[in-house]
Image 1 (cartoon, rainbow, N blue to C red):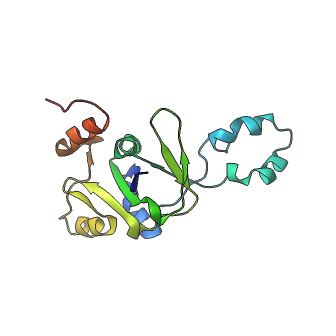
Image 2 (image 1 turned 135 degrees about the vertical axis):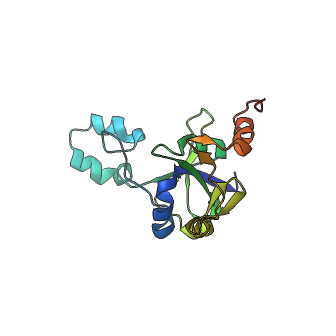
Length: 167
């Protein structure tokens, strides 16, 4: 098991995360349930009964990746991206595997901001410390700039994906 789990987000969310912790969210699907419950919901005649029998199908979840490379793929879906990491032992997690090497985990708990680090061009640093530096204009750049890894980290991500370093 990895020591850390990783979460891709947008830079515009960092202040909110620092103030309110990294929070789980409701299923963002057409059916309103997590994908593994969609078929069961479609097969039922009584949605209220299904809700009573499977409350976990509707619960808020926070997903994280087992690897930095996978989390990086999810960073910056809305604006400039950032990658956070957290010690996996600070929260209870349910592991999930799609069988395609994109292993993840989820929890219904929030992750305290004090347990989060952000990847910067200078390495990992506490999220709250990064935001303090950002306020006075001395923070290092986040790992993503214009939705692409900073050049100093590009080869690291290529290597994590099993690719050769760029020329």
